[in-house]
Image (tube, rainbow, N blue to C red; front, side):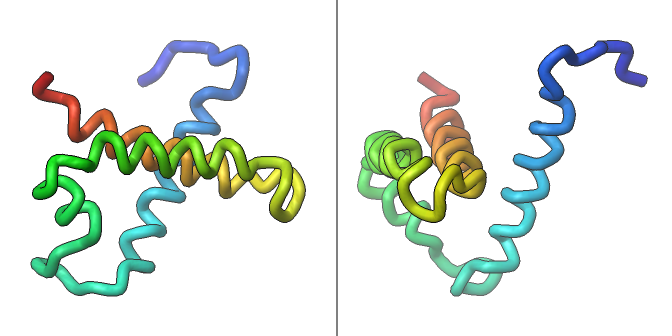
Length: 90
């Protein structure tokens, strides 16, 4: 059991991020075993920079498109997670 008393609702935010990422897997246009664009970026060696640039795009868009659209923050976090995946061995 988790005994941490989160002061800033980090536990709820992590659950929201997990729910968002899980939902993206039902939105993909390819089926299991087929290439995703992220696989292509990885094979080209550009996943870290492309994911970084895309995260920056969503952070820059926050507050402009549809107001303070929380989904832009979730998208930015997801791309940051992809950067972390790509740089895990560095």
